[in-house]
Image 1 (cartoon, rainbow, N blue to C red):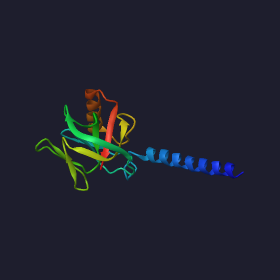
Image 2 (cartoon, one colour):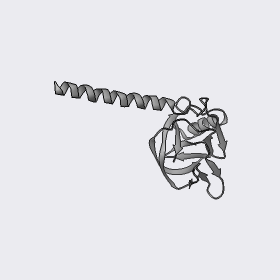
Image 3 (cartoon, rainbow, N blue to C red):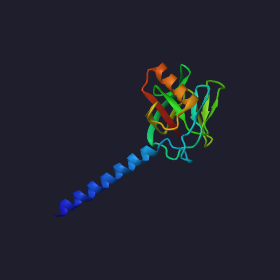
Image 4 (tube, rainbow, N blue to C red):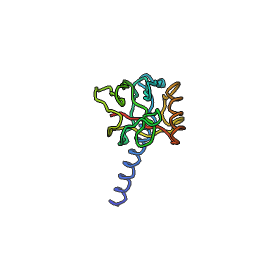
Length: 149
């Protein structure tokens, strides 16, 4: 009887973890006002125009590169969070909302996630969506990486 109860408790706990993950993932891409975020483009950088309510927490690691006019990490085009700023001097660099940043050619190690350019990242619209599609097509990729540090 104790084994059956243990299986029930563990099974219920696992179900709750899965449901919480699905719920959190479904909120990714919503801004704080409940309306879709609007993307912006500055040089090779694509940035969401407003903060998201929930950010994906997958690990994103690699070198930030400018590949054919698209900023990439591990070969995928990158969309940066609201408040990130592009500096075109030198090879270029991105400054994050917290004030730290990364130069093109340097390693990044932070949070984010991989999204289908048309369906996975809510709020990627207008010029930002067009730029993301162009980069995905140009590089032969499947989607974009949302990066936040």
